[in-house]
Length: 65
Image (tube, rainbow, N blue to C red; front, side, top):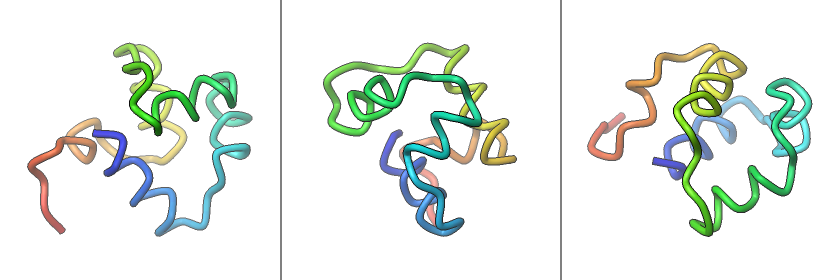
């Protein structure tokens, strides 16, 4: 799931720092998601989706394109 988040962030030239600022999620927490150390809560995924202006469906692992 986080791989898709990172792809969208890359497409938009968004850094983890900026995502943290926009979502009010701690930057270290976002890094732990990206490394697979922890899984984001539904609430945090909603914040990420809102910050990236996408549907939660965009984060699905099996989505292509």
